[in-house]
Length: 498
Image (tube, rainbow, N blue to C red; front, side, top):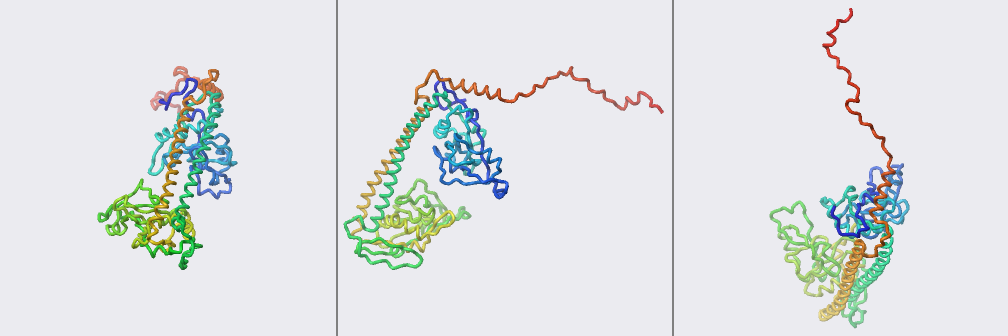
């Protein structure tokens, strides 16, 4: 068998099935969830088993037979590995530390319980989450939307095994070094959050005229509008005016995909923007899908530079999120979950509208949006009544330049944080490479080689197996002769007595 890399002579390659009891979890039986003989227990799903940690913020419960709950109950040190989901989730996992008493696992999460303590669970989990990912992706099966890996294949997962004493030294060294990485990454995450908050604040201040030395008071209040809740509007300079979005812009919804008519020969194919493309303060155009629509619809919805795109639906925090179209993709249109606001007569700079929607608008859209079971949305009518502060035209360009100066500084900080995170990921990968190549801590010639430990454990297991009685093999000549076959002719050889 070809192994991913060389290991020291005192180490050995083994397989997950040889050193661990690997089992699948429970499959939910919806028809029997009310069975009175079942017990209700918490259970882990793929969403709970992340790469390098367990997300226990939302642990569901399930009703199962009591015997099943006992057999699948997790124990301290069990390594959980995902069996299915997206392809990059295969083998993703971490260690169970008895966080929730009586917890079990679902069928899409494998449980690996190390036998006889031959390998530290942390080493297995770290190896599976790093070097193991390539193996899982190569050996997983892909269906239309999901990937999976069989229990049989999971047991064949190759694992490097150091001597026991060296394992302890490696774990101590990794705990020390990885904790430093965690602290550094936590600080970087904190900086990123502060950058996001500063950006939101800049967009809010730019939208209401507070980035300049003007006094933000004295403007005429906005008349109430039926069907929306404005709340307390922020103060704006006396030279500004409050308007409703529909007063200053043409606001329209986009195209709804008609799956049945996608092969209509009269339709034309054009690129179109979805909610995923319209982010807060930017457009993500890495993946722009295409759609077939009637030519007239393509013409009506074609975006032009200066159009402001605002999300109509999705998660609640996505309502009204958006940015300005700059003509990046020719003949592009937008879907029905993305509104387009085309400002009339250049009465307002598009960026001022977008910043206001992303700043002040976050709270307004949350208050005025509708929430269904899984999604939120805001109607076209309410979007047209979104309150907009409009400054004098002669002030707008200076406002935009001032806001862009601050935002460009924040963009630079964000790029620096992203570069630091990437560097940290590379250093962490190098650290794990050193650990699993046997170069992180020194080898001790007095350590028992891992191969001898594995051989001793194998012998112990074989000795513990119940011996089967040997069955003596009898040769053909030892067997008794078969009974003589009686035929009709035999009866005719002797007269029967009368």
